[in-house]
Length: 240
Image (cartoon, rainbow, N blue to C red; front, side, top):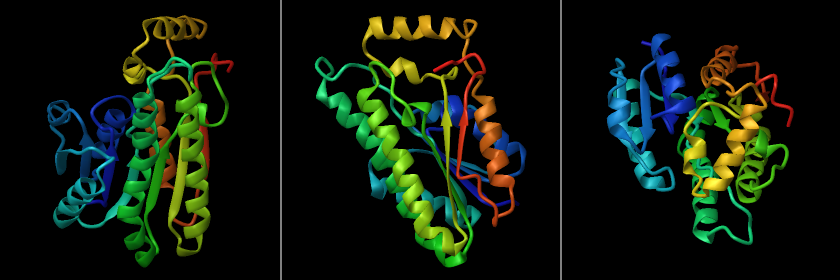
């Protein structure tokens, strides 16, 4: 059996595609998400499914340790769980700000802390943080979401520098617009309509999430002594 991979936000979108891809490659998995029923329907072998709020460090760690008891140490953590609630600062509910900051930043920090010490002791292991093109450039109605994703870029690069001497890889993938459920989190109908109009400029559809999954696997499959620090991937017709 190959090494254990942990994927957060695994019930749909990028997480779902990565679950199928890594399972086909023979890896045991810990799948973490809000909708356990959907993840169980994947019916993947050597897979543990747990409902975990990534903001809860103790709950998160409990699931990881359970999977490690069964499948061995985590070799790859994919911090994929995220929340996108678009809106402008003067109108958006501050509770939405807090939710994005907690899930998008604190969730990544929690997962990283759980696995890093052991990876550093073993001089092996990888973390891939799924950010966004909105972590590199700004968009209207994305102020807080972009702030959270710029934060993911910053913490990823900082941690990478800190652990590089231990041969642990900390990597980042920044996808552009993709066919996931992320937009559905937004509560403003007018903003969602505008987003769909923007997608129409790409030919009516945005990037298939399977290409993000394949990119993550390519990064992971490189030798441990080689790292792709950051990958930006988007539909060719996405001009922003």
